[in-house]
Amino acid sequence: MPTSAINLTVHLDDNRVPERIDWEAEDGGMKSATKAVLLSLWDEQERNTLRIDLWTKEMTVEEMKAFFHQNILTLADTFERATGEGKMAAQMRDFGAYFAEHMLGVKGD
Image (tube, rainbow, N blue to C red; front, side, top):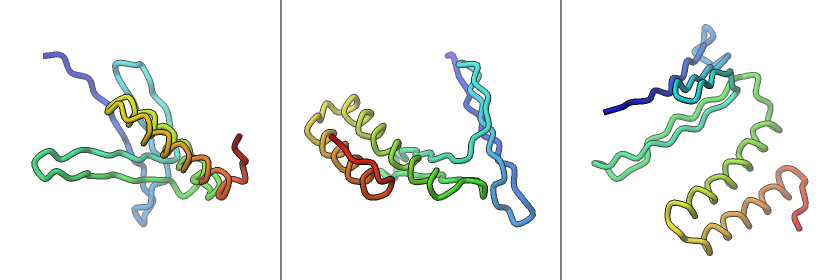
């Protein structure tokens, strides 16, 4: 059976705070540094989500707000593709617009 690996390497300071996060996806030929990672994993046996939330000390609050806004929108897209629930995905996008207006000062349509 074919496999594919996605690797994360977290460089820590003396206090174990992330200073740099590198990721690599061998199939896509991607290799890059990033300031934040939100990884969600479904535990089928426990029927629960496991999470890894990491960000470097260099990531600004404004970058974090933008990162969360973009995650809300991509979660809505993924949710719609995975479930076909267009109405709920639209509600998620509406919340994304609300978030952008109140956190980023961006007005929607």
